[in-house]
Length: 233
Image (cartoon, rainbow, N blue to C red):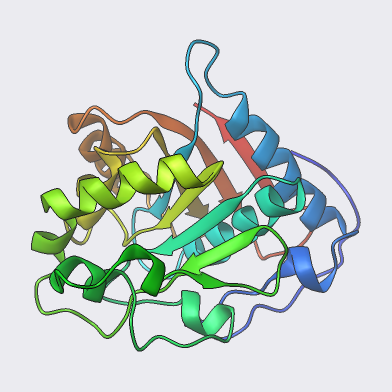
């Protein structure tokens, strides 16, 4: 884990992620997101990592902040990237990037006549597109388990260099497992003095049960530049 000064960065409201990699791209915390990006890309020697989920064992542990900043880091490297808000119960991507959420993933999966192009939104970050959640669905698990979801991912893999899904915590609902079974791996976010070891172990087992690879763990301290790091599994 990188070491630096004790400078603290204030986190925004829990429903929006702080975009460190945009606000202060030269900071050490932004550099650590770039390090995480590199570690993910080289996490497997025998296969390409193109799609991941970012999740946690419980709520409010920093997964949305991590997924948003990772997406920006990938885009800043020149890779055509898309961030998909697959947390259909507590979405944040539209707030973090200050964009519309009148249509998105849940509407795409539930409305047959809607096309993927109708829900993809460009962001203010070059090379980064977004799919927001759209209004909260009454049956998110059924939508994420659908054949249409698998088709959407197949198309995204053809169109983008890297795909990041912000998904709900593993320990609360099955949504994360449903997406994890379709992507190349999972990244866990662990929050200092909040994430319980037993909960994390249980969440990891649930991901492994759907034959998904755990690529590594992002450790989030007090969002100080010295308390943010990545550990490969």
